[in-house]
Amino acid sequence: MNASASLAGLTVEAARRALAAQFKASDIDSPDLDARLLIGAALKLDHTGLAVQSARLITGSEANVIASFAQRRLSHEPVARILGHKEFWGLDLRLSDATLVPRPDTETIVAAALQIVRNHSVSNRPLRIADIGTGSGAILLALLSELPAATGIGTDISPAALETAGLNAQRLGLADRISFVQCDYASALSGRFDLIVSNPPYIRSADIAALDHDVRDHDPHLALDGGIDGLDAYRAITPQAAALLAPGGVLIFEVGHDQSEQVSALMHAAGLTLPYPPKADLGGIYRAVMGRKAAI
Image 1: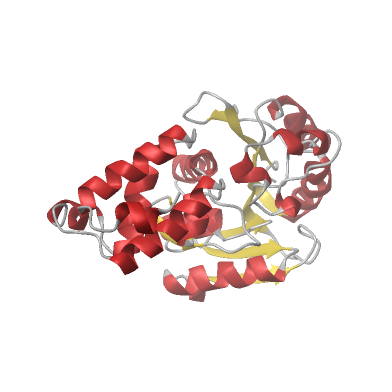
Image 2: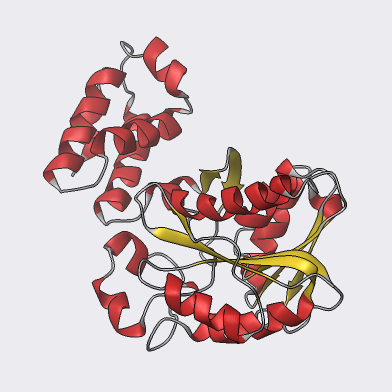
């Protein structure tokens, strides 16, 4: 697509429609939304700005920027990676090559954690939270934004991911309540935690090649590959987390579409009780599995 030639001189609205049509013809998901987001970024306009300036003409330099964005999207690079940020739980998070793009499904973990905390009337207590494999920091930062008395630690094996998470914490004004540790899962943690959350790698190794291009070609392989059966990370994290939980503390995992029973069994084997049913995402898939350490 030579957008610099085809879009220069069009109105903003006409350019948006033309780009959306190109995306639709190339079987890009959500072509209208993607076109609006990319043109908005190229022109430095939000949704309202695009509407207000819908009749103005696209300049040649603007068309060049749009062309660059469009080519990347047509190569199945996710819009969030092109823009370098993604909204999660109402927070604007910066991304890097070392982090997953936060997905709406993962908000199920945040919702499940907050429901448990609030049902136990401890949301105003100084809870200690750990996020194992924190990536961009999405889950932990969302929780801290909702629990003003809580503090948190995020771990990741990738120093680049931790750098991204640290920058997000600073940008969101949460850096004074959070720290980050480079280690393999929870191996460097100590003390007791009231809540441990994790969205670990859970894709079966043999299934990675069949993932959508957006994921397979652009998300870090390390954050996807869960081993032969997809459960390697759960086997490693569950006993670590069980030892780190305070009495009455809760472990919450994100799981794949058919893994809730197996992960629940791993929690049970590690001595955790299962008082909460798995929580489904908006698609009806069990996405959050929760285990609790017995209170003394």
